[in-house]
Image 1 (spheres, rainbow, N blue to C red):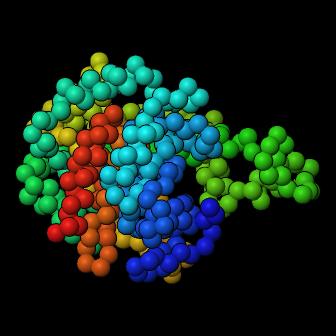
Image 2 (image 1 turned 90 degrees about the vertical axis):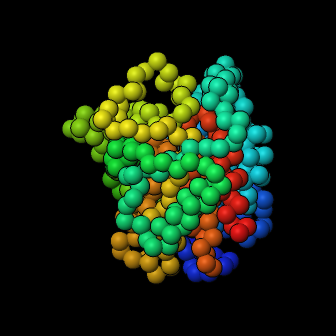
Image 3 (image 1 turned 90 degrees about the horizontal axis):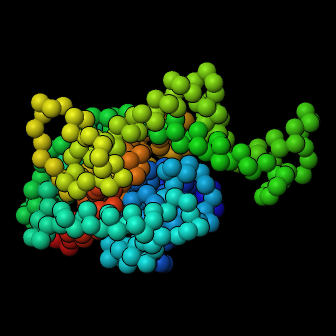
Length: 370
């Protein structure tokens, strides 16, 4: 499916989100399909899902095979599921959640067994959960998004679940960290598309005698070229230490801070000391999942997208979903009705605790039945 045109939402306004994968979301939201499997590149759940009012689930990194996908940023790329409801999403996830020897990033059966045991030890038989609200998510949100967030939190509390505040200080650095690491990996992965070995090739070579320049200029869109240039800049010898290496340290810090707030341990980092990650003077209760907005704003209109500042704004709107992808955590966005429109609310859980995220999502989904 090509993403180059403006698309009219079934319910309301024009929303041009063609830089990513809007047709998938429109396809589901207009009831043409029960579910769609798509690759999640930028974040836990691209803002497109909240704009289109569909359920979007990004499993823990490595649970679903990426075999056959074009690699963009291999340490971020995850196969996600779009559907009309959580039940359908979970059914598809159960079918795909298995080891694939063709994918080197696919978790082994042994590690999957360890995850199941770890999750089982922390299972709540009463099905009452502790829900976390991340202090750092209280950003410059639109009124509609803030109202939907409050509505979701109040609904979960009314269902008998405990709501507490938690702090993940390093998430404020997540966006610049992502836009250093992801383009760097993309620049390396996309270097193979030179028109020589496979794929598209331009009709003529450049006047300067560079074989692959016209091919890459014609074959890649504006946004892809921007990210390749940014990635090569970050990987240059003058900036590798100050940019790329520091971003990797921040990424690990974000992961450890998430580990420190969740009840369920992360089997990938067991044995690493996370008790001193957060301020020892701050008391907090460990949580099962965290809840927050999927995007800072509702969907832009066609005119807003064509505004000169639109591309920068689209980057900033990923600020809510990037942290989960930095840490490889499962996350799901649920459309919460607010008047005639919907706003996406995101639930994020510990690595490997995907079933708990889906269980809480089924609870939150009932908010639209009131």
